[in-house]
Image 1: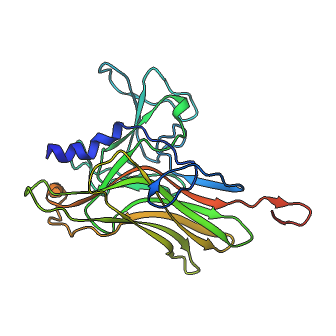
Image 2: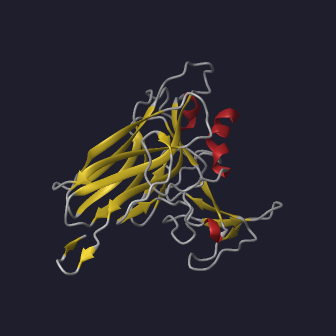
Image 3: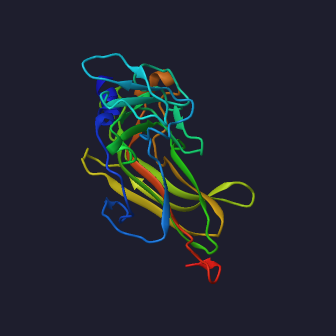
Length: 284
């Protein structure tokens, strides 16, 4: 059980690096430049853009007690290096990992969810704001679990390619009890979705993400892209793919199940931007 909890919590203290631009699917990220685009990203460690219904506390050093955060528009106390954000929808299964239904929600419907620490640990240093995820390991024991959603509006008068991107590491986690069960390969699915005329979200592009057989320090960028009609609602959805059926349906017996772990660093929707040509009234 302790090993399982360490798997859930060990990466929370690691610092992530923002993916600033697309890279080859399933390859280490590289920097590329694109003109006339905007990005809707998931930065869980924004001081000013906190999850709704979340409690924020700052943490000092040498065992000092946590204190309530200052309001989002006020500067943080950088003498206290870390602030914690509790889940918007909490699941008090135990003091460490919550439950798979815990979710962090934002007012624009961005969302992350899964087993993991019940608090997201973030930096108070302003120089580190907006630099992307501190790596966030989230786990699920079901193939239909939604780890992340990022909605966006494609405001362009012509059909263009839109990209959904994530930077992460994927692992399969064996049950702790009974011990020595065999390795089971697992997958996640990155989907670019579009809201159709029936007000239903449908996949228009997907990318399968396979688990790593050995733990690595390398994070990979995955992307799904498709042509999108003008003035459309789109979103990134990151969900479980191939995951063994749970051996127990009881939340308190999560340690009996196989789990897909996604150690997430960054997620974003990349949208071509309309730059108006005032002489013609069209986009450049």
